Length: 471
Image 1 (tube, rainbow, N blue to C red):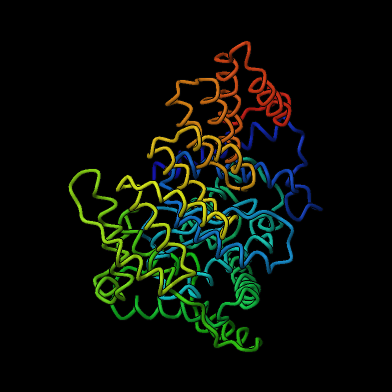
Image 2: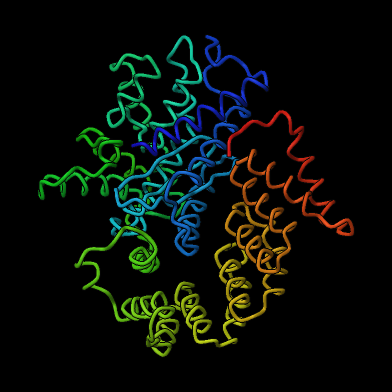
């Protein structure tokens, strides 16, 4: 809980100082129904900074790439020309949330609990609908005046994972000053809208539109049968018979509603959670693996253990899995990583192939660079990252890796510069400014190229004396 309030304080400080210096409109004006684009961007930057600073994110590249691929399939059906940012939160609770400026957080517990990609996609679609229907900003319509404390309280509630105030009512109501009855009414409206539009996005993206209602109904039934603690997502997204009926009626409006996505990738991602996060699978999931999935688990376990002990990889079963699933990139990626662990440079050809087939997958470039560095080809790794990173929207991990490579070369100027770019990508303006100053102090007089890059980024940032976001 201390971590939550620290994040709320960060957001309060960031938003209040930034807004005060930019003469933004009064959010309490009676004719203003929601906040404007500039305000949303600033809230999103503060929110993103808080996530990366105070919360346990899952930075596993394959998992993050997988969630973003699902997200992109769904957001492509919204008709909205805006960016969405998907993050994976290392939290075993079954939950998800939508924050300001298109930020969507998916808990690892949710990924582990999904029985199909359709179910996982249904929750993502629901959260995307919260964003497209501007539910966060529309909350301000129901009050006569607002201050920065209210904003921080709202964001803190969102960080807890609430679009409904029932799970964070003390925090939420204390800052907003709204009646419980009015806020609950608004929340129910928002949840119904998110279901309505989310099911449409789900269907148009090629998923089963019944998956949303089925998933929430299953979680609710399991909670009753096993008499355990209610999954967090059922507190933040209350399930009623009326809501499930509406979801079922909405799904029936679409043709071919029985289609299902393949779930092979989800099963492999769930196996990864056992090694990269605090979330683990249950015995039933582990015991019911196919031969290919068991092969993936065996080699994955060996990969995460090989630095500490002698292990045995099984590339032959990976070859068989690849032959059986030629379009499943995770088998090929794991084989390439096993090769690198065995100091087999042919892995680099595997990465070249994967980049050609999946040019929009940042995780392949990231892992390729890591492989080049491990195999003693640091300069090639640097060139790859410098060339490819600008083409991706989420650059934080790529620029952070680039900074590490330059740190190994003891090039302090570029280490600070690429760390600055990583911070800039997640909205941490103050840290970006600090790192740029450090880069300039470690800049060689002959290094004209780096000097020009720093100047361009400073120009993009604007006047530095107006930037007051905390690091």
